[in-house]
Image 1 (cartoon, helix red, strand yellow):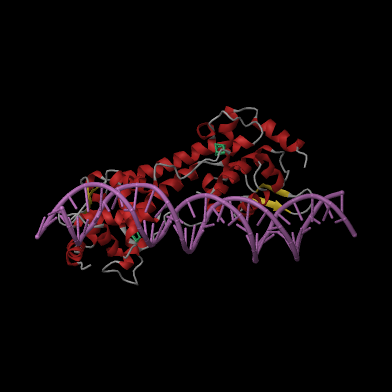
Image 2 (cartoon, chains in turn brown, yellow, cyan, orange; image 1 turned 90 degrees about the vertical axis):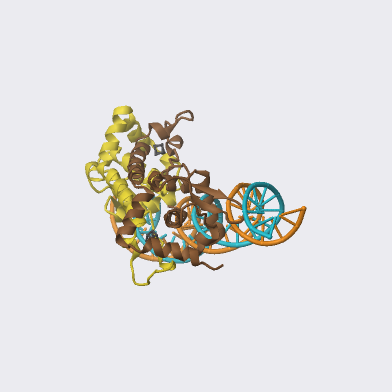
Length: 159
Length: 159
DNA sequence: ATAACCTGGATATTACACATCCAGGATCGC
DNA sequence: GCGATCCTGGATGTGTAATATCCAGGTTAT
Ligand code: SF4
Ligand code: SF4
């Protein structure tokens, strides 16, 4: 599991707490957790390509959420960062074994592959149930002053 | 996801098809898929430590299943190879952020961490539902002559 | 006694995640 | 227009973990 997923989710949450319509610089988002700015920027670009964030160039530019938090699932973010590939990559070792054929796609016929795929589907389904809005609501109910303190932290940030 | 998991599951399946009470050498199991023998041996050792296989030293030694296939879940094998760690390792970046405390275990309080953990639980539950016996049965119903051909392949193997 | 085989630590190799850098382009304020 | 700000994306460097090999030692069957 890529570490960038964690950064991306945190950044999305932080974006829900800044003033609406306000774009936030990659450098500022990185500064919040003291992350390497250039590298976080890459993750944000991936989120932008996935349609989760919109990016604006130039002064007063930066990133903002492309949709409402209710419409962004945790799975969306994970997929944007990790790529569309499945975690279980079947190496099709059956191909090397006796009775293996070059022209068979073992990923679809093989039992082990199917079993892994089913488990991964359950994982994805669970991540799709949760939205950024859900996370936001849970945080706010547990730490009611997080929105205010986050907003003011970004507002008072000196570069 | 470790590639050794695939090897281990295949090897367990193959072991269900050899004559009962017959131990199979790591080298033979590796030869079946042309895998690196020394490395597969490491995975088999892990399975032995986990109580999934029993190992016998000396001539006529090797590995055999420690329990009935019905009593070995796919999750057992995955856990034996991958170790007990969770796939989502929370780096607790909140600790670096404003308002972070040294003495808080963010892995338990944090919403993101919980969300990931829940998804991973669903994944594990799904893998625990399937046993080696289930895989075996599915393979045999699709490819009825696999047990015979596998058994005879091992029997006729020349080193 | 000898050969077959597992055990486990040390070591080499390789792939990939992590991280940085820079040239280019867009946008804003002046 | 001009300079400053900031995103874009490819090239590149770095470090760590997965992959793979090796060997010295222990166990067991014949
Ligand atoms: S049997 Fe399935 S899991 Fe194993 S190598 Fe073939 S496709 Fe992959
Ligand atoms: S908030 Fe949660 S996921 Fe993020 S660093 Fe803290 S514990 Fe980890």
